[in-house]
Amino acid sequence: MPLVIAPLNQKLKVFKILADGKIKKHLESLGITINSEIVILSRSGKSVICQIKEGRLGIDEGIATRILVNQEA
Image (cartoon, rainbow, N blue to C red):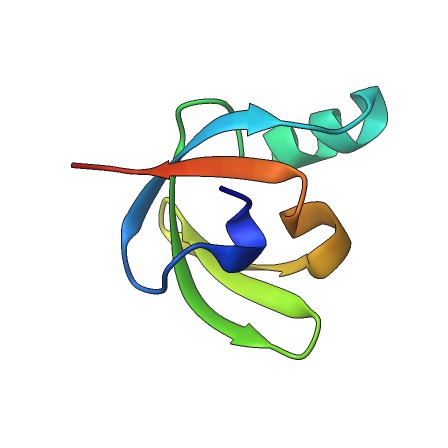
């Protein structure tokens, strides 16, 4: 499911990033890679606030729809 519609406050695992090279490289530099853990803390307006490792990050809705995640068991 896309990150933008994923449930709040649950551990999620990134399994695919549907973006071109430049955006993908930028996301990797922020810690969003395949198999990385991510938790959605809140949604506000057109952005998603996520926790990645020890930091928090705001991701625009357009990019969040291109990050596909699975719920961890």
